[in-house]
Structure formats: C-alpha cells, structure tokens
Length: 109
View 1 (cartoon, helix red, strand yellow):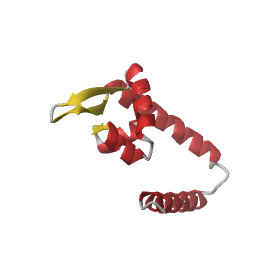
View 2 (cartoon, helix red, strand yellow):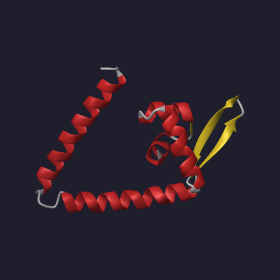
View 3 (cartoon, helix red, strand yellow):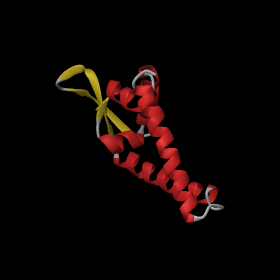
View 4 (cartoon, helix red, strand yellow):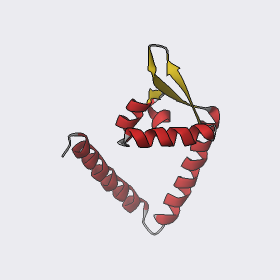
C-alpha cells in the first residue's frame, strides 16, 4: 500500500483497491492499521464528502525507504549465486511474468 501511494500519490480507498488488486474491505483494514501506526493519513475529500483520500506521511515514506533497503539486501543475498548477467535475465523474466499476469487479471481472464 505504501509503495502504491509513493508511486501514484494520494488516492481514495476505492482507487487504492483498484491499483493494488486488494478487495475494498481489506483496503480499509490495511489503511486503518497504517493510520494507527502513523504511516498514512486519511481525510474526507472536499469534492465528495463520503470519500476518504489517503496520503502517506513522512513517517510512512521513511518506513518505505527502510523496507526498500531491506528488500534490496534480501534480493542480493538470494541472488548471490547468479552471475550479474543471470541476475539481470532472471529479473527480466520475472518482470515479464508479473506484467503478463497483471494484464490478464485486469482483463478478468
């Protein structure tokens, strides 16, 4: 959720559900937990009072940076047996698979 907010900016709960592929009811639970931890803020949208707009806080950005560093270290450790060329090829293949399945999922296939 934090990565989605960083990538696309503030959004409504419905928009976050669409962007992440997470059911709306589950998005609400995640947002509430992140808000309790001070990582996001939610406020009523002045243009549509029934809609909440979710914004990442500075604390949320700091947490995302920590997570990015942790994931990079884990990736380096897991892929250490591969040569640089193999690492790049593996990453490219995984990206193609993820992109393919994301497109298939968005079309309802």
